[in-house]
Amino acid sequence: LFSFLVFLRYQIYYGYPLQTYLEYPIIIAQDVILLLFILRFNGNMKRALFYAVTFWGGWYMLTLRKWIIDLAMNLCTLISAASKLAQLRCLWQTKDSGQVSALTWSMSAYTCA
Image (spheres, rainbow, N blue to C red):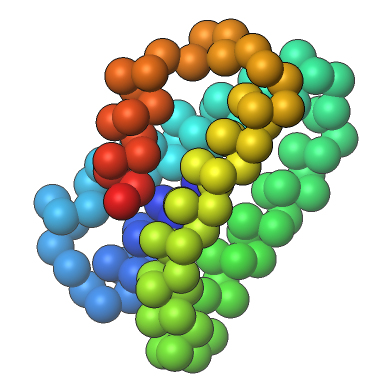
C-alpha cells in the first residue's frame, strides 16, 4: 500500500497525465478495503484510525521537499522486496501455505522485481 501511495503522489507531484496513473487510486482503494476487512475480522478496528492518520500524514509529508518524494520513490523497490520477505518468513514459521497460490505469489514477486 505504501508503494502505491508513493507512486500515486509522485506522479501527481510531477504532473504526469491522468491516464498514466489511473489504476493506482483503484488499487489503493482495494487495498484499503482489504485492510479494513482484515482489521474487522481480527477485532482490531481501533487500529484503523491509526493507519488512516499515518497514511494521511505520509501523503502530505511526501511533498514537503522534492528530495523526500524522490527518495521515497527509490525506496519503493526495497520496501516491496521486504514485504515479500516478510511473507516468506511468515509462511516458513507457520509451515502452512493456506490460501497461497504458487502462481499468484510468483506473479507478485515478478512484478516486485
